[in-house]
Image (tube, helix red, strand yellow):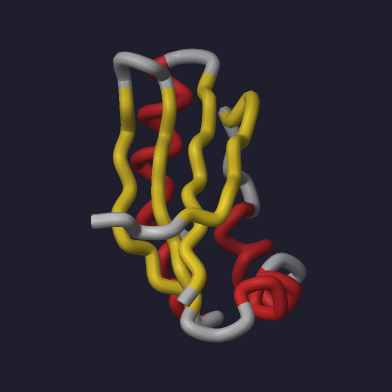
Length: 95
């Protein structure tokens, strides 16, 4: 299983709040493509949204199917994306 840590920088609290409210609608779409969202946190002190997602198979191949999917496009439709910078990396559990 590969796990990806995703950290998003936001410009303001309002954008972070919008992202936090919208994010649950993305989870079923990710799950349809075999991903597991382990947790997500809104860090208002640092204006970051941080979450972890994994896939039991080929993560990159699953992303290649997920990214252009009509389901993903639908959930992003009309969403005013407040993210100003993304930090995305694969991580390993140590404890």
